[in-house]
Image (cartoon, rainbow, N blue to C red; front, top):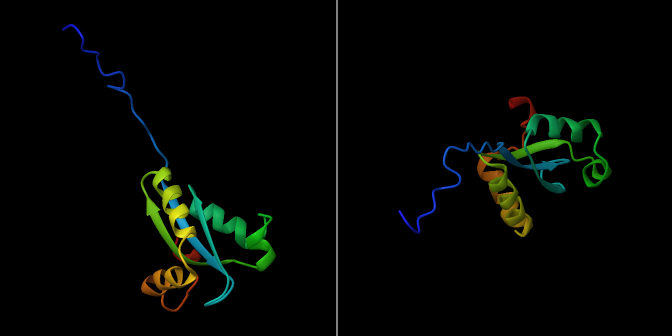
Amino acid sequence: MAGLVPAIHVGQICWMRAGYVYFLTNRPNGILYVGVTSDLARRVYEHRTGAVEGFTRRYGLKRLVYFEVYDDIRLAIQREHNIKHWSRTWKVRLILANNPEWNDLFETL
């Protein structure tokens, strides 16, 4: 058929890694950090052991209080960017709706 181009991507398998958006804090109602990763358990462990230099180590942010799971890391990255523009009040409401006691969720992973 003239003028029709076969689909270039037919038969290709596009495998995307899962992604996580997570919140760390140092205590209930303390300093908040929002991050994104493809391996939540490893990343939180790095924060907890101080292996990651920067904001989380400087302020002792080791308590995982909230996380979301995404099938595609690109969606998680977009969500993290959106959340970072939210006010602190909105972030705290999100935590309270899912973890009102501000429990450390690391052991539940």
